[in-house]
Amino acid sequence: MKSMEKPHILLVDGMALLFRSFFATSVFGQYFRNEQGTPTNGVQGFARHVLTAKQMMQPTHMAICWDMGSQTFRNDLFDGYKSNRPAPPEEMIPQFDMAKDISKMLGWQNFGEVGMEADDLIGSMACKWQNEANITIVSGDKDLLQLLTPTTNIAFTKKGFAIYDDYTYERFIEEYQIEPSVFADVKAFMGDSSDGYPGVKGIGPKSALQLIQKYGSVEGVIDSLHELKPGQQKKIQENLDMLRLSKKLATIHCEMDLPIELNQLLIPTYNQDHLHQLDQAGFGITSRHARSLYLI
Image 1 (cartoon, rainbow, N blue to C red):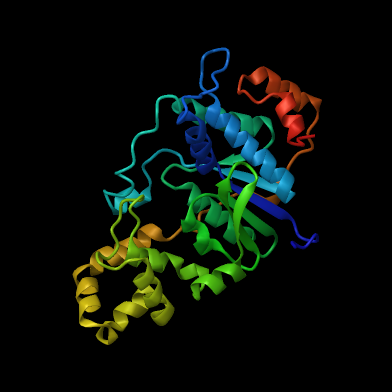
Image 2: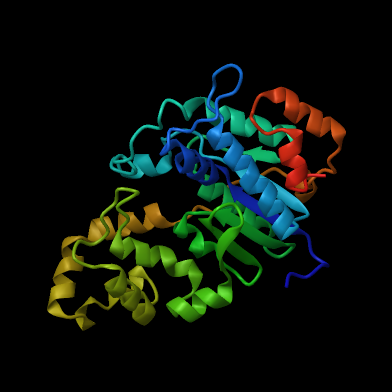
């Protein structure tokens, strides 16, 4: 149970929820077009996800974090970063702005910075307020495991709008036998095919975790290469530059300058005006939907 004495911040990976919601229905050809013919399936699912999470988790404060384009500082480090990902479908493109608009309409604060990822915003916010608040992160991205602390939990999307795979700091320690902060070091060895960086070829998830369990970090492994089996030594020595680069790519940047105060994230009290705006906006989220999700 979270302490009632502290604020409870809900940090939402907006892009993760929007993509998840879009593909959940588009695979069946369902785009839920509004009167103007604009698809709204992703926006509807995104809003329902956040409204449901808000009702379930009872936060006092909330921030919606967004990617701002596909180019980030990680592309400057490595040309291949996320280069294997296809462009978003045509039906999804107008929904990026629509999702931000509905967030703003409901009083949810949107955050995004060109050159950074939503993960970096989430990480910077979690670090900024970890001693002042209890924090819940909602996402589908397992890279965020490195942000777990005794005051920061992660709710990974699992099924529908209300079923999550909840990770606490204690659960992570029990399962991985390492500190969450060095999860990026594990990713550095095993790589990430979805993000397009290889890590160390020939070292998979199991071996990567065992190395960090024993030596504590990428640097600890490198300093102890002479202790490894010849095969592992060879693989790592042949990929040292990529190993170091992969750690930089996998590590969430938690030191962004955030000139915002916690009270700016307070969740407003909703009223009939909010519901009327929803009815008029053409997002496919009506006052009936909102009432069913306990918006007011």
